[in-house]
Figure 1 (cartoon, rainbow, N blue to C red):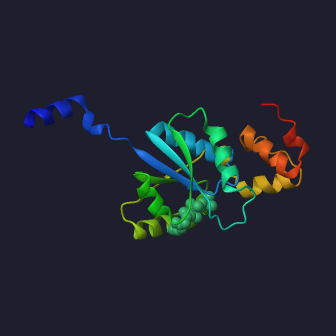
Figure 2 (tube, rainbow, N blue to C red):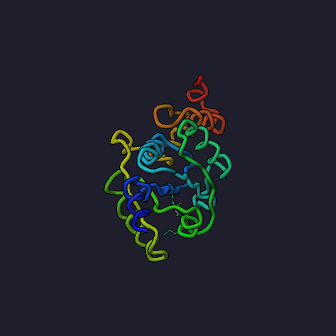
Figure 3 (spheres, protein in one colour):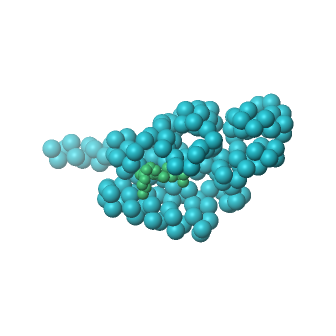
Length: 184
Ligand code: PNS
């Protein structure tokens, strides 16, 4: 038995558990800020599940299926990223996925109060669910899905703020000429 333990320690196999994190959100739609967080998480963890909330209480522009498809399209090159839709309480979904933690992006101090409240409430609901905050690149501090939708709705240029496929989808929703001109 001791021999097995020694072999395990020497091979480092005890560290080989797959580390899965869940990145939940409305993603209505995915922005470059979200994508930046996904890329950072994908470098740190074995598996990242982007969990798209179906029951977003915000009168979403895109359906859950559309939001999932946009995340899938934008993260195709990240081999350890999966995309799923979820309904109901986040803590229940986290455990069901075999995830060890939830990732949330913090853009600025103004995000902190709500995120802190949500993290502690999730812990109250299930003390095994940890929340890890990650900061997107500082150039995305001002970015939000809400603002991107507003800009697109008024025909503004959204290309710097969203992945290409999202820009196209916004153009299709709003008929924005600036977004339609994208070629890739
Ligand atoms: O991108 P968002 O809108 O900030 O994401 C919020 C989201 C979807 C992560 C949050 O509303 C959520 O977890 N919803 C699932 C229902 C739930 O568990 N609510 C209790 C949170 S304490």
